Image 1 (spheres, one colour):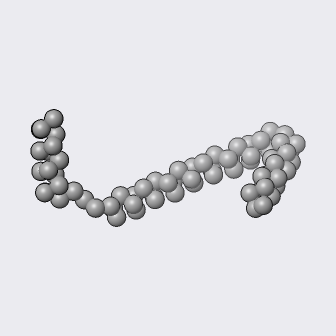
Image 2 (cartoon, one colour):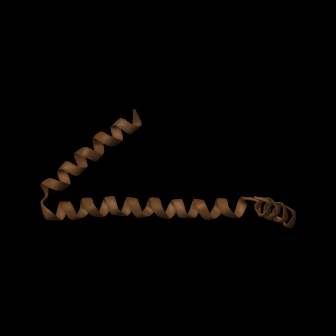
Image 3 (cartoon, helix red, strand yellow):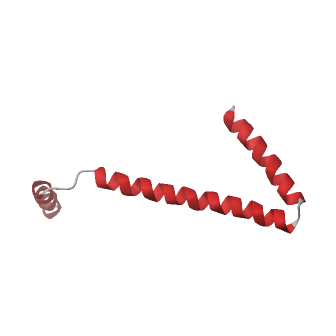
Length: 72
């Protein structure tokens, strides 16, 4: 239900902004591009946090992986 209300309100806001002419279009474009950049920033931040949490490969695991690759 929240998603549906969000879609409806976004559609109404977009329609009103486009009725305002070029200024409304520029504002609408700014909102969309700003949301995209913010989403990419958050994804990058999540990636950095997860990559520090994951276990690093130790010497034994590296030697075993190298052994398996040589055997192929």
